[in-house]
Image 1: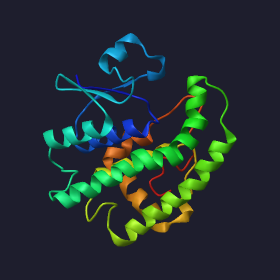
Image 2: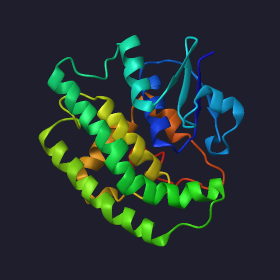
Image 3: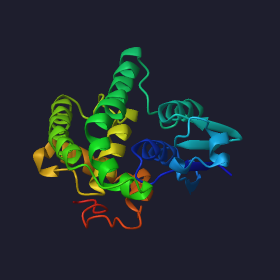
Length: 221
């Protein structure tokens, strides 16, 4: 059976889950406490990171490499543009969210509020939380600027860039750290993407000790 070793609120795991669901590829989800560095898991990925995907007998690591591999192997529906310029823009935006957004926002909000408790590494750093709350405004404004000029983040159709952004924002939305009133165009984009069937398992996630807000699974906010 295909199997994905993951952490429910990890945006990198969520990105892979969204791609697999969009392609209608069934996988067994296995929660992995990667920070415990269990020998079995370290043999699957010596880097000690999730996600790790076992697909058709292969073991795959690194979220963007997994997503592009799956998109190449199962091209319908395609999540990457045909043109070199289009593929560049998708990869640029995925890097924006997985690197800059992750560093500025996800690490300061989600990891401080949730991961510290799960990993038993102490209390949230209030300065980091405050910094993340400030910096997310900049990123939401940048998304609004993109969506004022495009139907989707990278162009006229949905791509991996939208799934990367939605993976981070959905994780933060689970802990009520996204101000959806800041931009109507971003809110409309998120409502559109979270209404897709691929998002159903994401919206059904439950993390013990961290109940989601009422609006989290509401397709109409």
